[in-house]
Image (tube, rainbow, N blue to C red; front, side):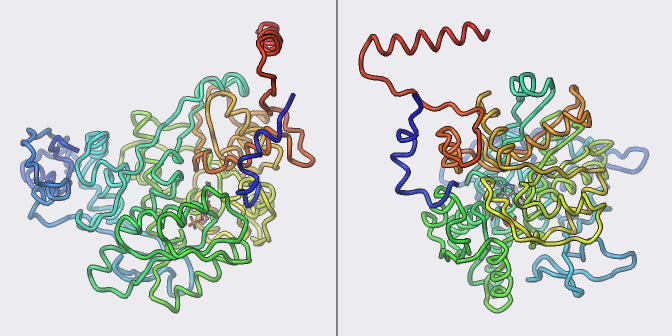
Length: 527
Ligand SMILES: Cc1ncc(COP(=O)(O)O)c(C=O)c1O
Ligand SMILES: N[C@@H](CCOP(=O)(O)O)C(=O)O
């Protein structure tokens, strides 16, 4: 007999809604000090030298890994740089800003992008970059033990290692979804990139390490940054508050009241952020934080700030790396404020432009049907974009109706021959339950992405043997209430076809035997 009460009892009073040291030549400073001088050049004049192991010096016990990094620092000038430029600027545009300026918008009010000196990066060939990035995986050297900072030259090349605030984020698991792919989709090459198995439980850590590191640098430069603020559906605020707390920087978070999960709410509270619970939705909070950061010395941490995307793009590079630099056919990403889909595109595109791979994957952006402005825009043939008021969705972190990165998302999807899909509440919850039943424990947003996969497989757009990666954006443990509701069959108008409620049984040998025999019998019959 199903026991809703068992599942809900302990949580009912709480839930606000349903919910390094091997010294390694991994520093580019180390690499271009001796290596550039002595390197051999290829036909195109590129450095083809691959990273060389240096002998590990015994570690002085009083040194921290930061001290070790300082000792390894080269005196040679850093050849790499980056700056802000208007996003998708017209040819001939000369507008640009130093990354040390506090600027979120171009002169015309448009989005910004971080532009790297690609000519400097191109002085090294694809094999060089592949080998360099590969040489840094799994190390504890500061800061390269981080999956983000292992790509530092492509992220924030000019920051001093001492200013970096990192939890050694990234290097997340790329899970071969063998049983899920075979059982539900007839696929043999399906993968889930678990970006949510991370310091604060979502992919936001990848961007936040970059943003908070730059803030740390700005504060040391005595720039007027008293605190860092964001609007959030729960994950950005968790990441911001953790990285700020780690660096001793005040954080301020604007949360839509009663619209985020309890696990997400408690994260900034525990990390000492100044938490404002505001009686509006995410879009209302976003509007407020933009107005407030224009008035007060609070640095904006949402993905409107293009620095964030520099960290997030490393997840795309990591996927290629984990496939030994083979390019998957499809990458499916759940979308809300729409920074991440562009970040993935940018990561893949840089790998192609710098010769690490020869093509980029097609991408799919998946939205909840209750918050689907991008989907509607796509369906209209990219005609007029209309922001909307998003309705409640179990995929609460993407309950966003007026995404700030709409232009970035459309650009990325057009460039990669991308597709936009949507998922109803029932579809996303069923997909989440199906994935969980094969050993995963995913969040509802990943359920949205899996629904998109189901639909594209059913329509024959994605073939059974296509190598496909579904990006899982948050840890399922942040969204347990939605799973409790589902498995309790406590969701109005939802069949909850894959629910698996606990069975209540008396503490009696015979009674336990009876239910077990019945269970085992049903298993035998099914196999
Ligand atoms: C768990 C989760 N998945 C997906 C997204 C969507 O990412 P983006 O806003 O970059 O589209 C977000 C945040 O919006 C999120 O928190
Ligand atoms: N899901 C996000 C929404 C805000 O997105 P951002 O990437 O612009 O910060 C959250 O967790 O707050």
